[in-house]
Image 1 (spheres, rainbow over the protein chains, first blue to last red):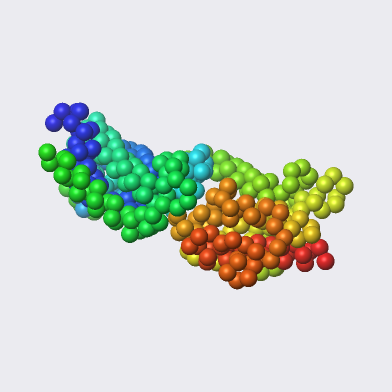
Image 2: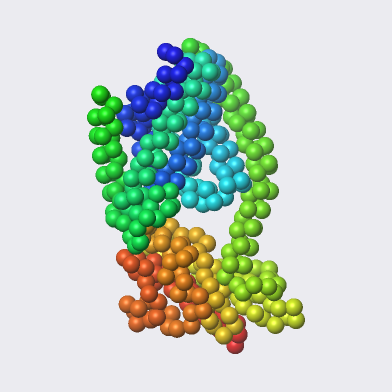
Length: 193
Length: 184
């Protein structure tokens, strides 16, 4: 597989949200606005790339029976590092996303990529896989966020184009499921061609 | 691929991984401790300054037994006369506790309010954090009856968020009550 396709497969063929359907909890919870989706995607990508790199390095020496606990410790460490860094240097972002950052630990995308890719492949390929899947996740979350923000609040990235309220249901949980479902249909229809 | 498992290598690898991770976390914690404290302090200062008139000196945090009051600050002019109070007040909202910083003048007039923390519904109750909205603007200089119009007061509630608006109003009322009791 070429290096370039390692990145692009995360966007289309193995898009984590629309094709693999992984990490639904943060997807549904944080996409109330485009900016929140984007930030959550980037935070997850940061953890994904680093954990992929480290896991591909240590995989050969990790005994099979303890590989899950070892991976979880590695992932949890990066998430905590990220959380502390965000708290210290981007307190505003932390205020909106803080609640969801610890949940990255149990995001199945990250453990999924560790199991399915990083522990069988080299460092370089694993890093690219992290970038690709991370970009795919970020892009999906941002698109869902944009749709929900347009319909629910009448704004894009915080810039309001209507006065008053949008369709409130789209900012709340039912809207998240609806938008995700329709986008998944649309994505798979377009991707098949 | 993965090494064959036996008790020795399992224990060794897990211990080593945990030690390294703990060390990394320790370093990051030490490095970020100061900026986190600074950011929290700056935020508290900014929220106090936002709800008080400009100038004057702001005291350290004082505690009170009054219901729902987490603490308050007194703003004095150069000669020690009280200009205003900033009260940290908490009530139960729709989704959990709502904590406000309320600036109150000695005569009980609300100077300004700001939201410190909340878990209200995004798009509904969470609108109480939008600073330019009518709901927030009406608090500036407010001295009418502290209840939403539905309950016979003078506060226009946020559309479809009466519970949040009531909680907000109650938090302000707690702050005003504290200031009145302090001024007596």
